[in-house]
Amino acid sequence: MKKLGVLTSGGDAPGMNAAIRAVVKAANHYQVEIMGIQYGFQGLIDGKIHKLTSQEVEDIADRGGTILKTSRSLEFMEEIGREKALNVLKNLEIDCLIVIGGEGSLKGAEKLHELGMKVVGIPGTIDNDLAYTDYSIGFDTTLNTVLECIGKIKDTDYSHDKTTIVEVMGRYCGDLALYSVLAGGGEIVSTPEKPLDLYSICSKLSQRINSGKNDNLVIVTERMYDLQDLQQYIEKKLNINVRTTSLGFIQRGGNASAFDRVLACKMGVKAVELLMNGESGLAVGIKDNKIIYKQLGKVNSEIADKQDNYSLLEKLLC
Ligand code: F6P
Image 1 (tube, rainbow, N blue to C red):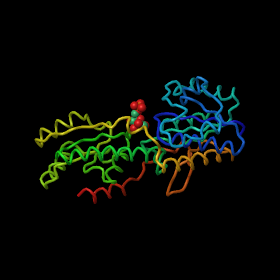
Image 2 (tube, rainbow, N blue to C red):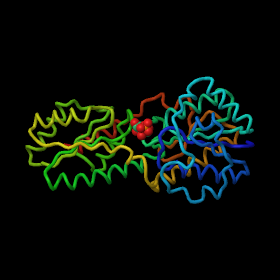
Image 3 (spheres, rainbow, N blue to C red):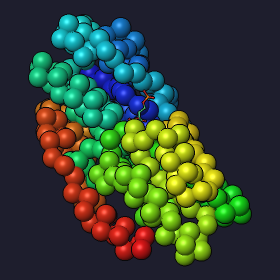
């Protein structure tokens, strides 16, 4: 490896900076020049690239967001955009690339690998929706943020005997909602993997109210319901007041947790090592507490088995 490029792409996730730091430090260790590409694949096409120094990344491990900035590039989705990106890399003599991002970004990484570039991906997304890895960078921090917010809402719900619906992110993956409830942050949960219809949500709420529990927190994954419709349906059916809170971007920002920082560190170093060994077309991950890697083309080809977590839920929410 002569010159390594690194970029972050898609939604930012806490811990991306810790991954950048690890990549830069490991590249320095192997005396490989390292270039930071700003604004993800779009910045690559536009040539927004500068040399990264060890000093620049010294104090970034805790910081949320990404110092390299990020984007979702439509241009890169087209073949012509990818050819442009490849030419920029060639002109700058960057022969290896590390892509930090979620599913779409890893797919983009695979496309560059198919075009002959040496590429390794690192999973960075709060959604935890990549089946090949137990955790993606950012999920743990966001889960903790969600729990902190829910805790505050619960104080008020308890004081006023209120019911609140909290909508969390996750795209089409229910992990943020599911893990929040496993961690004690809610009583009723509906996720894309185990969706509840309006009638079931009401009957669960009604059971709780009939047993004397008048403060209730319903957690739902984004994109599943129109929150206002859901609120009005429950209010009408159960004759109670309901509030809704969509946590939004609060979930994406903030200092990375120790778990995410350590995970990012391990994955960043592994990604550089793989490229040093001449590997390409791989994404690093974590399975059963071990850093693993899988072909980029297979990162999302299987459905993660979440049955264990959902059967836990049955025992907790009875
Ligand atoms: O993938 C991360 C994520 O935060 C999802 O949870 C969410 O659906 C999406 O990004 C929001 O995207 P945007 O930044 O375009 O609003």
